[in-house]
Length: 622
Ligand code: ADP
Ligand code: ZN
Image 1 (cartoon, rainbow, N blue to C red):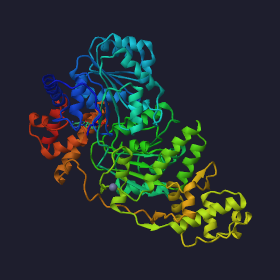
Image 2: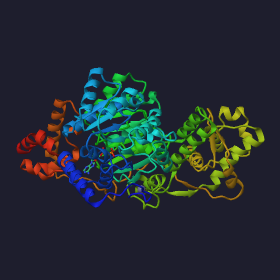
Image 3: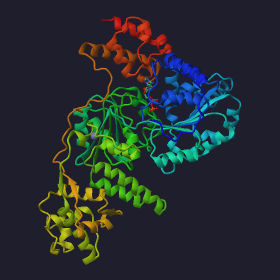
């Protein structure tokens, strides 16, 4: 889908045809793919023709080709600005495996390495040059760029320019100089996270007002979304991995460094190989853990959100959240790291009342003015609404990203096991009136735990200390269990019918609370399950690659072993050699010659020359 408000210059028929011929040829010969996906063809043609573009595609949508192909077709070097310094080496390795001449410049290099790359750039011996954004602040960098021929600028992770977003990088603000200094060089900005607001900010800050915008569907049909009530998070996680993802690579996100360490240790104690990743670890340990995650099969990384941007490991089978993300954008980006290869994957999260209280506390204590805090609250509200929805999660996510009116997906927990709802109006009234009484009659505010104890009629020391057993509301809520009351509080918070504040998580009423207390507003709630039911496999199985017959599966395993050995020998991640999808297709089709092998998706000229003989040997072994 392309937005109607495109402005770029139309290509004339004849040049467009010639260019699309060249682009097609590069796609086939270098990347080994038969056809462009979605908007790729149009984007590539537009950029080759010198047009600017803003590309919004979900993770795994195929953004890289949108600048890599034009960089190879246009004269000069494609300059790619990317904040993902730790991954530049892998990106360059992956391109080299395709026979593309690529280099990078960032602060991790020795000066002589840098000089070599600079000389290659000036001599026109590169197809692609990856550049860390902070280098653009150096006059020496702009001088260097002025000495070579530039095919295009690609601005990866373009949402980093947005102060409203969650990944703001001040260096990205410098990127507007590119257009000022090289007005004729086409620019393509790419991102996987952009609400309308972020998109507007990217356009504004990067001066892309007259660029064409390409907005792909944000759906990731192969990802199953699930959100469950949190009770014993580590146990729940272990069950989830053991029953559904044993032996799979996955990412587990936690809010704090401490819980990252604890969770990683817990998984290891229980026989699941896991490494921690957070900003407090020594740089070298962090880099080593990331590298292990990329290279080894079936490793779990337990991480804070410091981990993952640009990780393009294609076979991450699950992303688990043990704490509530701060925003839907963050959640979608993090979960988007699962299943880039299009194979079935799971986005799984546990969440509880304590998460809401904690997030609210973080907001109250955050630096920044009231407007900033309001924004954070809006982000949190949207996240809570996603958690508490009784409708399809995917529909909600897509609506949030500006793609409303979708039909229920059949591949999220609420579609697979629709939650029961019940009339929570009376329960809500009981709870809200307890909060109201404490405030009105005694000027007191308390957290959810204490309010629930009052409702349940518990004569505990704190209740007695405050004489709360004498309140009229004492014990009026024994019809619900403690966990059910917590569910009520959570849902009232998510609906804005109750608010929580400060270090102690005190509950207060909102304006909307009055509608429930005095104006007969109904409060439908979702029932709190005793235990989260594990949804059956998606009824409507998403488009996935070839299912393998048992005999082919053993061939697939042998191909994977060969790939692991080859990758190790060359010191690159396995997926740089071939993706799972490619190996799967080889196992199913059993090509008998190099020519037949070359017809398989993901095998271009260079990989055929490099690995073709090895693969045919594995095939002949039977
Ligand atoms: P993004 O950067 O948008 O997350 P990538 O550029 O990494 O996505 O592409 C995701 C995956 O899809 C990669 O494995 C890539 O090789 C593959 N891919 C991209 N375009 C095509 C295509 N036209 N045909 C087949 N596979 C493709
Ligand atoms: Zn759904």
